[in-house]
Amino acid sequence: MLLLKNGQILENGILVKKDILVDGKKILKIAENIEEKVDRVLDLAGKFVSPGFIDVHVHWREPGFEYKENIYHASRAAARGGFTTVMPMPNLNPVPDNYENLKLQLDIIERDSVIRAIPYGAITKGEQGREYAEFKELAKYVFAFSDDGRGVQNANMMYESMKVAAKLGKAIVAHCEDNSLIRGGCMHCGRRSRELGLPGIPSICESVQIARDVLLAEASGCHYHVCHVSTKESVRIVKEAKKDGIKVTCEVCPHHLISDEMDIPDNNGMWKMNPPLRSREDRKALIAGLLDGTIDIIATDHAPHATYEKELPMQKAAFGIVGSETAFSQLYTKFVKTGIFSLDFLVEVMTKRVADIFDLPFGTLEENGYADLVVIDLEKSLTINPDNFLSKGRNTPYVDEEIYGIPVLTLSEGKIAYKDEEVFDIKYL
Ligand code: DOR
Image (cartoon, rainbow, N blue to C red; front, side, top):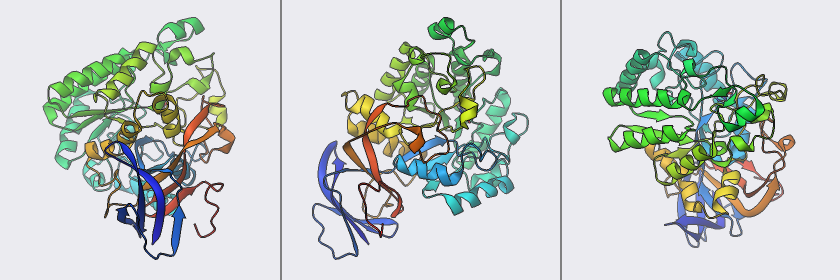
């Protein structure tokens, strides 16, 4: 048993001092003062204890792209960011579009991951958008179905997939991008792309497909979850769909909340991601959408790449930035310390709300619940230095930014998945 003394947890939005007794994978007791004789006691000295974060959107790259990232490193990076449950996307090689392929990934997760990882199954074979993946044989093992990395172009395929997913009790989690509207773009089509003379991806490239899909979701009765919404039009469509009682939910990424096109300093591929950083107006709509509940949750889209794929001009670089290790701290610094979000709200959209919309038995601190938790030093700060990342991916545009609210200890099912050696210099941990 492990006793965590003198932590502070959120109760009805207020921080209160509590001790937490962990027995095996579960939390046995949460109380003001626990005086149990146990072999391991850790004094948290007033630090904040949150339920472990849940990230429904990560790219763990294995099997297939281990030169960018692997499960060993990605899981440790996620644990360092306070995540205890993540859902790896299926743009892998081989793509988990049948059980045999998925099994390769599940076996590596079992062997190498320090946190819980529940992978996606693909919607179409090889994510090629032509034939259906083996939904039935995958359903038992996967979190949901997604062709993330690309949009499903054919409306009928999306409709049929939704109908099958609904029958299997699974969500369709959609990367929305109409290929006919990409137009060779490498950043948002707007003021900054014009200033830099670069081809732009228009907002409608995303929103048009969301509009199609919410109607398909209505017709099929499927739970439809939109990945990384980035435009004000997307927020508007989701808001209307929710009003109409359609089963739609969506996520936003930290970078789309924190940055917009005008933050891109020059023609630099480190700032390239899909969807791209949009206009300031879009960013404001995303923040408002998250605050009013139109946008349900935050997900990172942690997308590691090799440095040589990112240290390139925009048109040549790969899409994507890493996020696992800095997501909470960046959001805490930009939105909680400035009073735009409460701490309670930020934690909610990274934990309980995620569990609620996907019906998962995680995301809260409670007796008999899983001991998935993260201890955060809200006063501690650090400067983002990719050389110190646990992820193999070093591709972040946020180098040298100062962040606060640093996770110092992460427990996943009662086991230590990450500890800050400077804070917890204890051998037996
Ligand atoms: O920026 C992105 N990177 N967006 C995606 O949709 C895919 C992802 C990746 O796999 O690198």
